[in-house]
Length: 303
Image 1 (cartoon, rainbow, N blue to C red):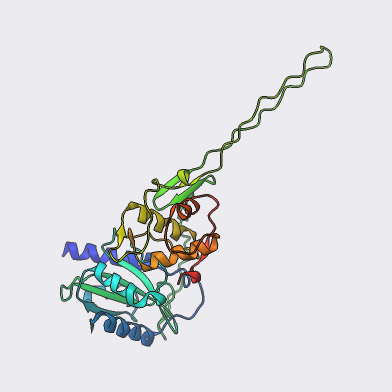
Image 2 (image 1 turned 120 degrees about the vertical axis):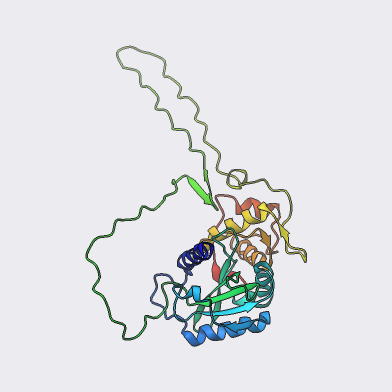
């Protein structure tokens, strides 16, 4: 029971933190129950899964619009199948906030985006549970619900961590750029005593940050989409940097596997930065991606 309670707390926290960037804080209409059900039917068809009731332990998680699908295969296998079948309707790369025990994304529907999370089935009836819901903070409020006057007590402000102006955040690593040396002020001699005019010392400007400064590890190979997925820390570093440059930025971290969505995101970055649009991370793309001159790109360009 303690393990199940811990899992449910983690799932609830993930749902609260996984707000889609195109819905959080906006007044845009959210998908209705019928839209969530249609999305669940679509995923069940793609995965040859089973529409089912969500676990009873999910009663206090998400909204009352939620739907669930049980399917075989590991979380990673299910994710790869959805990427292969629904890439055009997924919002960029998949994300995880619990070391990839579960992963989440958003699926495009005519009424807006529906939140999708893949995780091991806590009831053990299927290998993987697909959980669908309206994105957090965007679900319509229940009708005719009694309201409670809001508390007038002021809530303490939550401090927001800040990154220094001369630093760059890549994943969980903060990289600090070198600060140019100050220009010394030459001493002016007094007119009463003639003296030779001193020569100001030469000022050496610090070099601009390069890929070697911003990249968390050196370039070692071309990263591209292959039948046998390339994976490793260099792939994860590329995914984290691409996530940081995507506008709007939804946060999250890469999974370390170079799949079709990663290749599509690389193409969007290359087009925005004047590079050859190949979907491959060669040396030129790597250097531009991890340079201070890298330009952000729109999430809508990922396709």
